[in-house]
Image: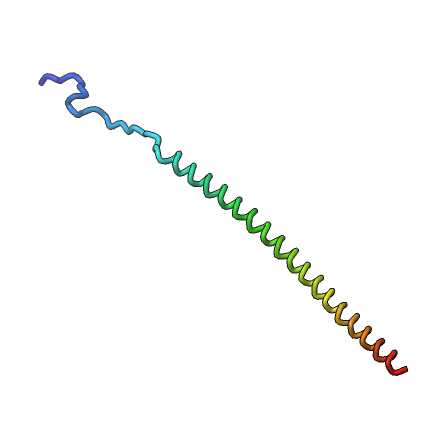
Length: 87
């Protein structure tokens, strides 16, 4: 028996795994970064709205106090006018 020299053309070559970097990983990173930027932007936009709502609530409360003071002032004026008319 004659041994044949090792030849890779025969198919007897050892299996070699070639690891290639996935080209989609950059796209996934970009999408995650974009989602993060959008989430931060949304947070800041809604935070401003919350502050506006709080300011509107304070302004409305102050307006209610002002209206109540006017009602009390008008009632006091009417009472004073009524006392003057009796004398």
